[in-house]
Image 1 (cartoon, helix red, strand yellow):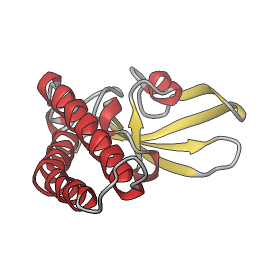
Image 2 (cartoon, helix red, strand yellow):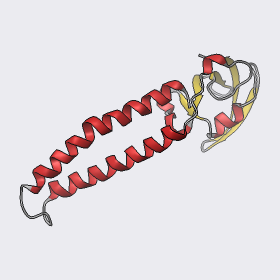
Image 3 (tube, helix red, strand yellow):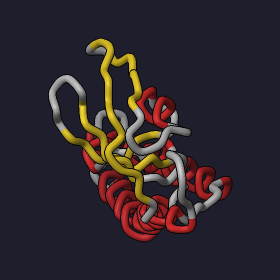
Image 4 (cartoon, one colour):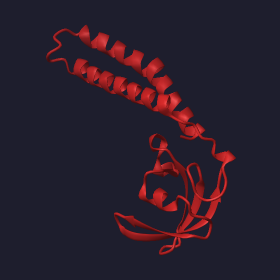
Length: 151
């Protein structure tokens, strides 16, 4: 996991514990005051939200306890974890830039590519100027690696 990904997950955990958890406990207490719990939609919604929050807290704690933080700025060479890779789609000439990151921090909309994705697996070990073939749901795609940076 990158340092930025670790920090983001740690921040989410802090918000869940210090803001979300107390808020849902207050919501449950308020809903209880309304009487009959069997037909109290507010109570059931608050309990469901509490269950989600507690599950996410456990998930984040597990991820963070096992995470190995890697500083990409100390790496160089061919594509590997942490690399920021600029590609050009050989069919559409569209340029895209992705950073290869761990599964918990992946977010394609932010350009954070899961290391387990087909594209990332195809890129690992390649160098600038190399072409990679990737099988996608939309069919076979070819990308040329324009640049590899470690920031």
